[in-house]
Length: 110
Image: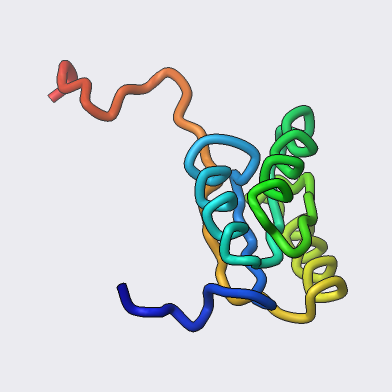
């Protein structure tokens, strides 16, 4: 596999929807590369447990942030906090979102 310059030690990843599911899985994988990980989620009840898992997976540093991504002011505040702590972002994974009460494979309406 080809090396990806944005992934590795001293690099920083910001992952929205990072407290569970695919976001957490990616965070743990990137943590294993020695990266700084910023977990962004609105589910504050699971953020700290997720941060512990990411740190255990090998992250150089873990930052958590309760941010509702449709709120522009909240995203601006997130950006400022991330740059204040890590000075740069190398990977941005926009993974936040929910789809309650729907089934992408349900074709009864078509």
